[in-house]
Length: 318
Image 1: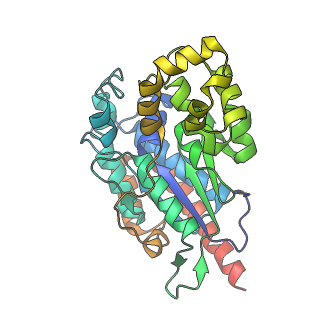
Image 2: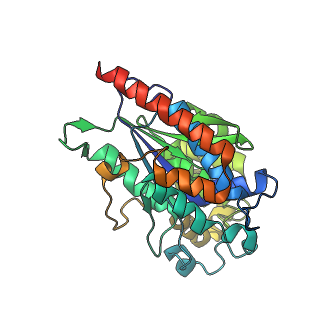
């Protein structure tokens, strides 16, 4: 897919709200509202949203957020993400403000208890691309491309010919869209093999072990030959002894890691493609919300991007 192409396309941008909020909070210096409340993460989130709209010209936008409740992964493995520090209060206090911004912009926000934002994004992108859901009031158009915006590499497993992933590369100002070849270059395996790869090597960020003693290069070699995690165990006799012992001893750990690494794509959640198309940048509610937060520069940018987008849409109709 070519996420940068725009003319005539029906394109959905799915934003991982938690990932971008975290990145914005750590990338920007402290900012406060007139009332002294921290606001830098929301500022960065809105700034990136305006950049994404300018670059990709989406027809549809939606956001997914994590929930506070434990997910099924925490229930499967108590140590899942256990070593992550507690979220700074200055960041956690901004999520409600981010929700207010999206509500003002009429951008739908989705979440589900027991699941992560990745699972919500995975479910929506699969239903949109695999089931060819009609969009628009007349139901005559189809979403041709999906661009996922996140700072989390785990979601690269969703990349295919219609789904690309935009990852920031330098703060919030620069980023790269990953297609299949880009994923292979970055991860050493194809998107559909990322889950098998993480089952072998584990994930330090999410704190699951994989198969102890199996490193990235060994995992890449095994998957190049046997394709899937399960297939490796069907041909253990063909694996050299030192690696075979590690695989045998770490099988249960690897199988658990396989389950934790896989993004769920059948979350029981309702969403509306038509609702995703109703977003606006320069409505009165948006301007009032920005004024409340002291977003003077972003107000000007939102008006400019909104006007430009309307003109481009009008040109496409001519």
